[in-house]
Picture (cartoon, rainbow, N blue to C red):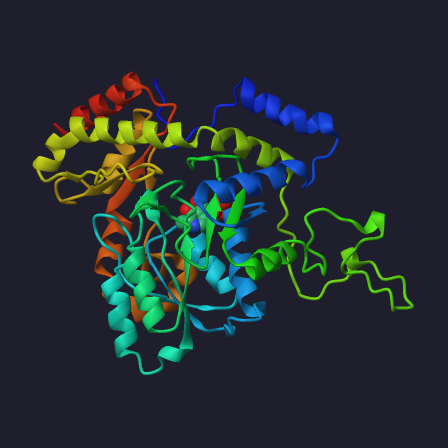
Length: 405
Ligand SMILES: Cc1ncc(COP(=O)(O)O)c(C=O)c1O
């Protein structure tokens, strides 16, 4: 039976050579490949700086933690962060783990992004808007959040914006790449994403302090943060020559951090995919377009809602919403697709109302997030990745026809 995976990374000669090059260099912890990736990825997104991490979740936690130590931002721990209920759980876990308080606003039903107008309404009605520090939109499935509106609201209420671009590698919003339109942004290069490296992540920013702080936080809060250590040449800028003790800045820690460092292999793999980013972007779009053209009958019949097509979107996958659960339920459709080898995933569940780990928020948000609640139970996705060819897509279309006709 044919298998249509949600995501795939095929290790071919180029990828194998990249990993072998790391092995031959005898240096597998962070070094030249990580630095090269950081430079090239910042250039690709259009930001000044990039810090690599062992995952997108680590990038988010470190980015959020960096706000507390930033000399100019004055962001208080436990302040409120406005975010979306419909996202992969890592978004909200990072907010919690960095000791901030998430506040949820509903999403658009078609493009899954947070409703900017409702953010504004919430802040206008709030008695203590000064308790809020940040807006954290997620560009889910590659669809961009409405960054112009969000940035305008943030300015009006004196807030900062952090984009979660884990799922949007190369998406354009008014000509700018997602991840380049706010204070900082995280990316995940998890296996199913467009630029892939197994487990790997990055944080991009134009703010030098955030770049320095995130490099420190990921290395257990180490005092020094130079790209290349010049201690051996006696040029260390952190060396305290007036101290009597043998003072080694690599083992002096001035903030409490984590070990979120990555490995050369991951950066080497990600570099091979970054080179193909434009091809991946286009190929996924073509696949979405082809599936849309050939499944439209099910949208016209009121059974499925197919993904909105745009040449600006870098598709993470092919999201589908059940239009009428009485015609066919998500559970039934997913089960039958899986039986025929078409892999599926639910569109994440609404975090405060449908995720057991957040059940302490359930009463507060019950019936307040109708779109996220609906999508959390009735939306799912299948693959549209770059390794899928016409015959794979035709197979998917045939299976949908068998199940739904
Ligand atoms: C929206 C979103 N944010 C954050 C993350 C976290 O990334 P990672 O899985 O690399 O930790 C993901 C991962 O898929 C994600 O989809």
